[in-house]
Image (cartoon, rainbow, N blue to C red; front, side, top):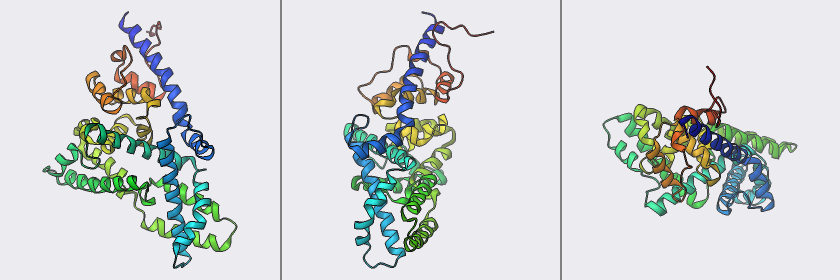
Length: 324
């Protein structure tokens, strides 16, 4: 078989697998909402669904406490008991939040897996350790900030909690919009919600969130960011940010692509990021030790992989002859 046929064949196969995975990825918010509501586990594991539900419940409890504080209540726990359920129900109807919580759950799943299988510290990766003691004060400071944020992330995930102040801005604003919808029509609660929202917004700084710090650290590495494309060296948080920055995909999509239904997207992302065959095999062994790359994947070039990811011009299908 000629190189053109090899490239076209693997591109066609990867395109089909990518489309199948993208249907799941694109609908994950709606699907999760349905699963959480009806207890169906056909598409998502029990552990992931339980974590998404638990994180949504925790955010609902945080909102209830903020409402109680805005109302001047001395015992916010009573409000949590009465308000958490309707707030959680409304949050579960917000696909943007569910998509983000799914990506957080997937990131934690991979973090736990690497700790269990490879003994990898969930907070302090070899790359962070090296950067903390590096001569570059900016990189060292960012690495220390990320270590602090990652250690807190580990504690929160172990308790199945997630502070609202750690949400990306668009997700937090969707949460606040949901809060307004829940209290709409009750003048007293509308006022409490406005007061609570003002306090939340005032205390919020997206640039200090763990994800934002990881993204800044990747940018600070410059050309050295290629070293962050090793999950066992960089740690999951930095690896996801580096892969997203290199491919132009969202970090949430990259995190979700570490699941077994997204093998094609993960493989294509690694190729688009510039990794060679051995490096991609290394990452697959770390993330999916029981999965092997498809035959002829080596024939797929980086620009072909990027084109498949973006839906643009791609490698010719088997049998096609390029024009010109």
